[in-house]
Length: 374
Image 1 (cartoon, rainbow, N blue to C red):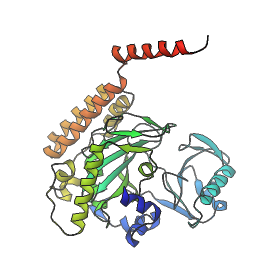
Image 2: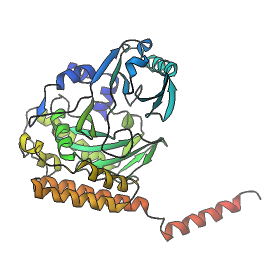
Image 3: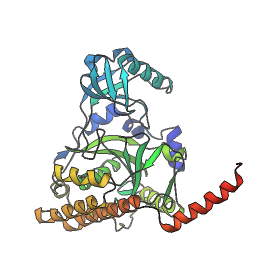
Image 4: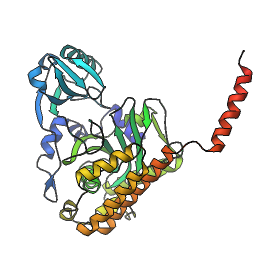
């Protein structure tokens, strides 16, 4: 937290400053491959320097409009045309006129007085998970180790989120972590369809940095992994919207110290983790791993999303079946186990309160009722 707080107020190195520049990063990643495959990069249709340049012609039918220097989704609009000069913003779940879009972006610029005026108009991606807005999988990376992953679903308001561990299994709210504000809802974890390639990309991208900690934001789209952004400071933790248990904090500190030692050229004993297993395979082997049929994944994921634990069971079955089509067994087992963990999480979320909890609630209600005036 000392590192990420320092990065929040003053980016530490030129490389980190460059990597948080979305235009620079797109140019940098355009030629980078993993096992012969490129990571998806949303096509940038225009770079604007004034809100007045936001026009119907520039926005087209369906685009993502982003303030180039924002963070925590500030200034992001996912726009779909619904009429003349009228758009539906999937990000805020409201209709916006063209004038409203311009005024709102001008207000965003005012919140970043030291930043240059710049907006990016790019593709509005289609996610593999339920909803019009693709899920954001934020990988908290410690060089080549995944610490935790934040799964963000912006298809509702407040947004839905859940934290996963480095093996993509859900952490428990109220035991492993806490949310400090009522601006998020707990949701069912959904293991990405492209979990193997998505996670390996997170590792490869983190190793491009000179930092012991980085957050790599990725999207699991219908066309596979897509890049979001590099972040070296995490606003949710810095501002107390998310806090962790002592055990999780200690674990992340250990990963941070090991990553720092790696950067210093020291030898670190590999951990027995999904991250380590992914790196035992050549990039070409990782890239060749089969993935679930898209429609099959979407059907089961939709069921699980609505707290139907059977959907998680079917996802685990379908993932296990990929071994027959060439999936590497050890890597695939991590993903199968993550689907089963998601299934158990959905069952807990969908379960009615236990009799003990109900009885306790009734006792509290009776005591409070006696204190209230008739």
